[in-house]
Image (cartoon, rainbow, N blue to C red; front, side, top):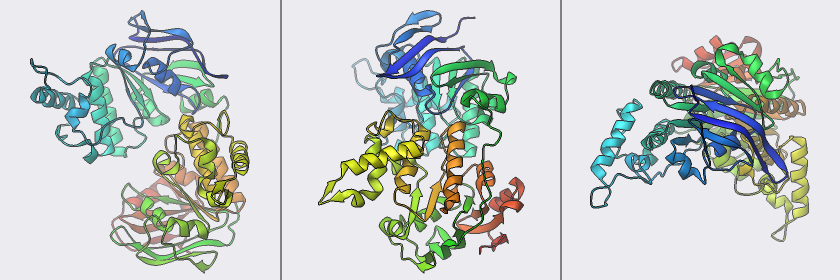
Length: 506
């Protein structure tokens, strides 16, 4: 049986940096072939070469056994290769049907857009994806992330895609939407579509993939049937060493109280939240989507000022009516969406790292570029950021390295309290371990850390105590020694009542 897609001996360099060296990959019709590797391993470059966005320096691409050279993405699309990117490339102001057929709208005999046919065929594609309730005339701006992703997949199918490359498709999805997406993938596989599935989530790989290929440092480490590997063996292949402990938590004696929150409320969003946070402590926040976790963090940081309650830092009451007030109080916040709220990706690493302390680097409205450069160079070394130099655009870095840049930016403010919202979302296992290790180092140096995570193993593995939220209220505070998936999960699911303090708020 001939593979539908083959990449043979692919090599690619950007200047002096060798990104891919002799990479082989193949895909059969009706197969899900997972592609794994740490951030920076070369996955994105390989995807771009397969989809015509980059041209390989060496090697060849074959479709159905025949060599192909793509001058650009349009040629790859014409051959049936489509990519669903992690950051969806849709036009919010256009309708679902318009997005699905953008660039190749069906036409009438007179050369005008055949709106009736376009709506009808868009409806047929969405039905194929089991989306009966998705209105083809709805503006994309009104859709959820999960529905936007389905529109992106429908757009790929509208071009008769035989190869569908999915780059971290579940990174921004809730669990229920993940389950629906995996079912869509099963339908497409049964229809004979070949799917390249790029993900860091091990459970998805073992559930949906037939084979898996691992890249490390731009080289193919191996390809195996998923049934023949274990999570441990995949991790070892990806990072070149055994990881016995993904969550390198160290016990650190709690220091003095850094942050006190008393009766904090934001009208209609969070209500009567009270807790404290100590130097050297990692306080995890768990809760279902919509429980108020991120809203609590943004209220403490002044993004949405509280309507009631009190915040104290080092025992002193602080009025936090803005982000500027929070920074002045010694609070830093690494947001959930690093791309949208944490970084300016077209700008270089140097300017991103200095962004939160420009006032300290500026004299007479002129930035001291020498100090800015030293700050960035120190961040690259301290956080092991993989970048060509401080002038490289942040958008060119891998997800894990972008996250390190956001951390470096806020740690430059010399905070007392660090809020981390989904600190390892969308990054690979090796990068996750690095972030977790860094969190431990920061706690050891006396930083007080408030960590929000949707991944219960991360919350259980890294937290000294766990604050559980439900419907905008505090459901429980659980000590590490008492925290289990069952106890924390039960607190996340329980109906509204007074907080169950297993370990106490104080």
